[in-house]
Length: 185
Image 1 (tube, rainbow, N blue to C red):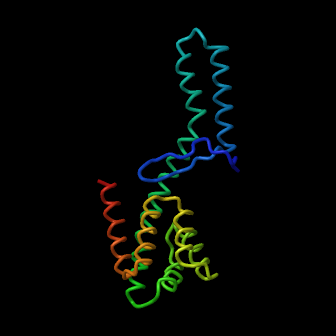
Image 2: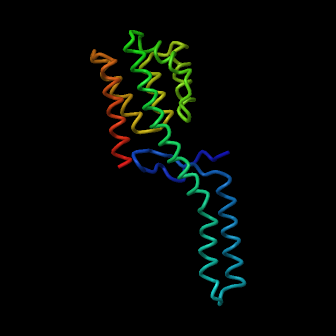
Image 3: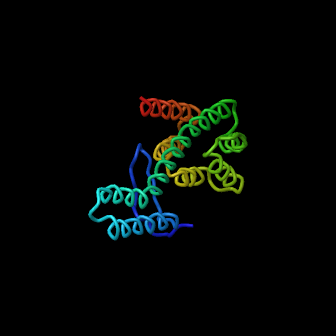
């Protein structure tokens, strides 16, 4: 459960745009931190433990924010890695002569970890008759990953301009691989 109000509009980190929503579990940490702080001022004001307990109170108040932040970074990295696998599978299927919408439907049955729900949604939209460009834009917006958004926009523009889609997908795959390699270095 989370409130609709974002405490931060967005955080740019590692080319990943993340939105952190205020969740009820954050309130527990904040209340715990305030409680520890009140106990600190009441009982430990003139002791050597005063500063240490203030640090403990701040840690209790912020730890869940940081845990969620790092979990989201890890999830976004996995999504980028699995996107590379997805694009490679798609390239192989498209090069065999299958049109892109049918190729997406074929490769959507594979397991892509954290990316799988988004790929299944993409395949469902294509099955329901949503235009491929709209479905790809929805896919990139749902993942909320800048690498995927850039890749999808390149594919859409190349398709609109009449480029060979299999070549474009292959170059996007190479580009995503190079971006990942540079980030790792």
